[in-house]
Amino acid sequence: MFGPSLRKSHIGTRASLSDEVYTLLTDDSKRLNDAALWSSVRDVVKASFDEAKFKALAEKLGDAAKQSIGDDPVQVIKRVAKKFAFTEGEQKGVLASLIEGGDLTRYGLHSAITHFSAKVEDYDRATELERRGGDVIELPRHEWELLKAA
Image (tube, rainbow, N blue to C red; front, side, top):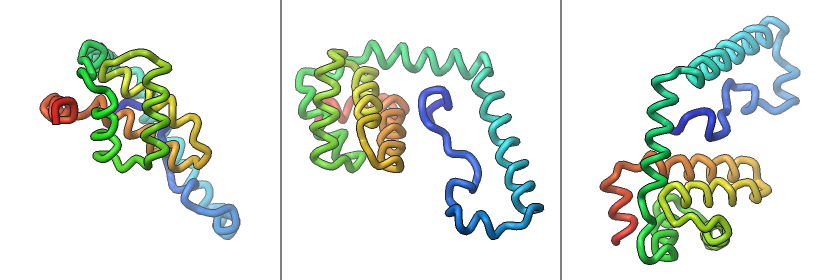
């Protein structure tokens, strides 16, 4: 999956518990839950500063910035939308963001998806779209080429 610096990370179970259910937990359970959460945060922060991981991510993004989206960006977006189950409105929003950004590369498509995700009101769907932007970068090269040429 994509590095924590380029996507939202949901850590711990607190987000899956309603406030009403969380209030039912004992202080001991809350303390253990908090300890697990902060341990996870520590791991994510540590990984974010790992030089080898950072260099690998920078190289991957640099490569994506050199990979053209092809001659028909609209068709590429349609295929990406189908692959990642975008709604028609999301597909149009991503296309508008791609045009606005003017970067017709794999990286530009990633940016268009994540840019559009910021406009989505439903937090869970916005987060899912942000992940999909990362997935565009993470696709194996042969899958990317198929999306461009299909």
